[in-house]
Structures are given as structure tokens and as C-alpha cells.
Image (cartoon, rainbow, N blue to C red; front, side, top):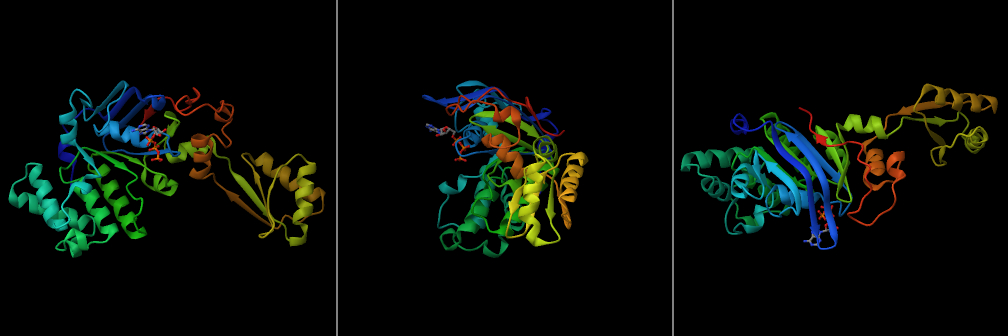
Length: 349
Ligand SMILES: Nc1ncnc2c1ncn2[C@@H]1O[C@H](COP(=O)(O)OP(=O)(O)OP(=O)(O)O)[C@@H](O)[C@H]1O
């Protein structure tokens, strides 16, 4: 399946928001969001519950109107040109409106016809999507006889019947089994390879890490960081070293020896390990010297790179090693601090 045909005549940025804001009465759901997603990019939007992810997805898919700022999708303003935007986007969530008595194949053929395809082309599109989403086997069952996972995959397939150049998926893999999840990841990567821009919201850090070219973190309605998963990990997380003393009885002793040298370790008594943040080789040397002075054989040493979970803790919640964000006052939802280390979000071109 390809979505490249649409990309050639479209602007450089598939999604572009400027100072985008949304208020619900007293609640500020989005506040000054500047976001740019080029074609061929998967942007993973992370954020705590209530951070504003669904609100942003809703505005980009014309289901909600911004209260300030602008958003353009496929070159069209989401308010002034909502109908043109709708013709160019793919969204999950259409399933709710579908008929339980229909089959997956009939459903997709109908939607493809609604997108203007002739009979034969609509059947071909439906068959392609059924195969892509592993639905061929159940294509002839009525929807009411299909499992929840099947319906969910059909919902996602339904969003792609129009070969959208911009795809917005709000937590697309929530509730999917591991195989369906991998299938969906493949589909999303394929869409981006073919030139579509995909914005997906997720709570799943592994998903963001594996799938997204660019990760953007929303915190209380504001974008607080963006970059490739690797960039964010390098900026926020720190490497660590884990020591497992050769003699397990030395673990507590080692902890005291490190503390005596001003080094704080996370102790795991069950494993007999101590883990210390060690961004530089100098810090590793300090650990080894402290242990040596105390007469402790450091035994096994393991080095770990930072993970996206650390990034998330630091940026999305403010509880983590990012000092700028930690220093931010704990304000009410929607009045998040001005810390925006990532500046305007740029997708990887
Ligand atoms: N229709 C609404 N009326 C009033 N407040 C709303 C409405 N929709 C969202 N909000 C509020 O806007 C803020 C952002 O909500 P939103 O659903 O966009 O967050 P989210 O990041 O998608 O959260 P979750 O991960 O829990 O789905 C929250 O404070 C929420 O309570």
C-alpha cells in the first residue's frame, strides 16, 4: 500500500502548529504549542494523563477547535479549511459508527467507495488493507462475531482507506495483543516510508522508542522537549554503572564505603548490586577507588545507557534528572512553567 502519491503536491510540513492553545473553561489543555512534522516522519507524542495529547489529536483531526493560535494539516487550516483537512487525514475511531452486521471486507470496501474509488479499486484497496492488518482470515465474518482485537485493527485499517497523507493515531496500540502491536508498528513505518506524516500519541515508551523518528513530550499542555529518542536520552538520562561485589556479603559495606566518599548508590539487596549514576569515566574511577580503599573486590561491573523511561520521568512529570524542569514550580494544570528546552518541535527531515 502506498500513500506517496499525495505527498508530491503538498507543502514541506504535513503538520504545522503555531502558538496553538485550547481552553476548556478554566482548564488550559494546550498552551502555545509550536509543532512541525514533515512528510515521511513518525512523531510520537508522550505525556502524562491530562497532558493534552488527545486535545491536540482532536484539533489536528478537526474534531475540536483551537481557542488560540493556528494549526495547518496538509497545508490547510484546521478551522477555515476543515473539510479539505478531513479529506487528507487518516484517523482511528471511525469504527464506532460502523455497522455490526457488516463484514470487515464490506466495511473497508464501503469506506473506500466513500473516498471516491470505483468498485474494483475499492475492492483492491480493501484487500490490501485486510492483508496489511492480518485480517484476511476474518474478512468474511460479521463484525459482531469478531474479537475486540480484530475490531480494533479494522478500526485502524478503516482510517487508512483514503490513502491519507497525514495520519493521526490516538494511542493506536492500546489493547492490542503483542502480534497485532508489531503489525501496526510495521504499518506505521510503511506509511512514513511512503511519505505520510504520522502523529501518534502513546503512553508506551517502548513504542515511542521503536517507532518514532521524533518524540515530543507534552507536560500540562506545553511542549517541553522534542528530539529523536537518542537525543532525548543523551540530554536527559545519564549512564550508570552497576557493581556486584565478588563477595555478596560486601554489598552493604560497599554502600557505606561509597557514601563515605559522597557517592550515592541505589542498593538492590536481592541481586547484591549497587547502581551509581556515572556520566563520565572519572565518576567510574571514583567508584572503583572508593571500593578499593575499603578493600572490596568490585566483582562484576555493568554499564547501562539511559532509557526513554528516564527521559519521560524527567520531562513529562518533572521528577527526574533534568534540573531545569525540576526547578519549575508545581503549578496548576495548564499553567506549566516556561521551561521548553526543545523549543519548537521539529521532525527529522
Ligand atoms: N471536553 C472537555 N471539557 C473539559 N475539559 C477537558 C475536555 N477535554 C479535555 N479536557 C481537559 O483538558 C486536559 C487535557 O486533556 P486530554 O484528554 O487532551 O489529555 P491526554 O494527554 O490525552 O490524557 P490521557 O492520556 O489521560 O488521555 C485535561 O485537564 C482534561 O481534563
